[in-house]
Image (cartoon, rainbow, N blue to C red):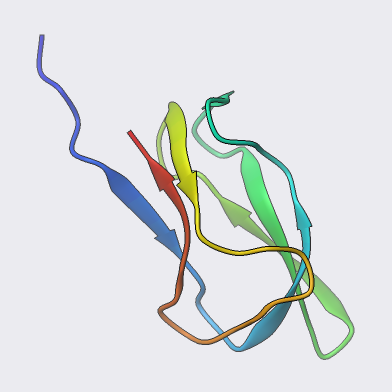
Length: 75
């Protein structure tokens, strides 16, 4: 069975981390929201591109992230 490489979910804009929708060890499905960002009073869900297990969360609620910052890592 082929093993996936770790997948980094990154921010696509400058935003505030509004909420974390997963925890380390959680199994997530493709398309599931893992982090909710807020920018210019709009909520932006950051989605898992594929199913996997959350191996790391690189942000906390209230952080300001930049375009390209790693939010979550999936195995």
